[in-house]
Image 1 (cartoon, rainbow, N blue to C red):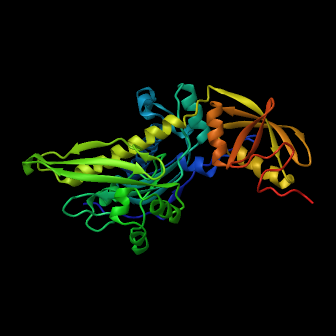
Image 2 (tube, one colour):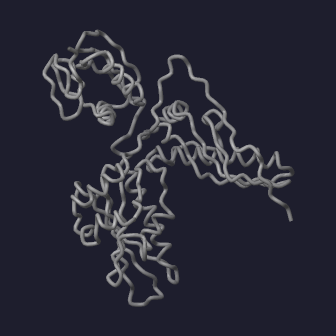
Image 3 (cartoon, helix red, strand yellow):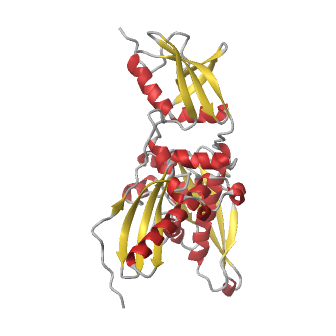
Length: 383
């Protein structure tokens, strides 16, 4: 029997050199390109070889997970096998946790950060559409609508437990379980959740700095013969967007199988559905692109610096060329990848929107329509 020992090092990082004109990558993009919770386990003739093999396999597993995360399911068949790729080309750095080793075996948990530029180049070379933007947080409320014992919060709610245990928190649609504390319980009742009380759901989302709240109702439907298993009906509804945000579907547990197994599968199917919807509306194709001539009203240099920094961090923006700079206005050409709709969605993440202005465009904050030559709301005019 071998003994485990924990090494003194916990982190190995390989840094990537950036060229002087490389584009700054946003924090959100970096987060999308990071894969955590990769379990590795390898046995070899010695500890050093076992460790090396485990880390290589773990990085390949992480690369495979990342590619499937970014690319629509319909195109997964065209993805290159991660084992066939020079994985070191795509890894930016990695962290090691829960590391254990013996004379011949190595176990650990990896978090791997991949290079956004290298991954984008790979997907572009394969002609694959992909999405690299995560959604704003979305609070989910697992309502277990058992006629005998309905439950919304954690206690006595196997549907909640399934989300807590099976939810993938690194999907592109970022879901968040609330705390389920006394404040949450007082903010939303079972009846309000069933009715889709928009005000209560909005307040709950606000507490967690989320975009919205999504009620996911799981209704168990027992069969006449308990040995046949239990059918679970899943229905999702989102405040402000009505029903149908996730398709309704039913799952049946196998004979003798606990309902928790069906609920865990339902969690995966709901996340798959939400992610595919998100990918279909936020795809980025690097083989497409264009440019727009935009006028940007400003109140001073600091306003433009802030806007320019935000634009530079957008993966959809490939280049910004300032063509003229005046006291209260900047004119620039924004070169982008993908289509204009993708660019406008990216600008919306910065709180900006485009309005037609003759043959050019006006770039200004959302919900404002500044007159030509005037700074948009929220930007002060210099005295």
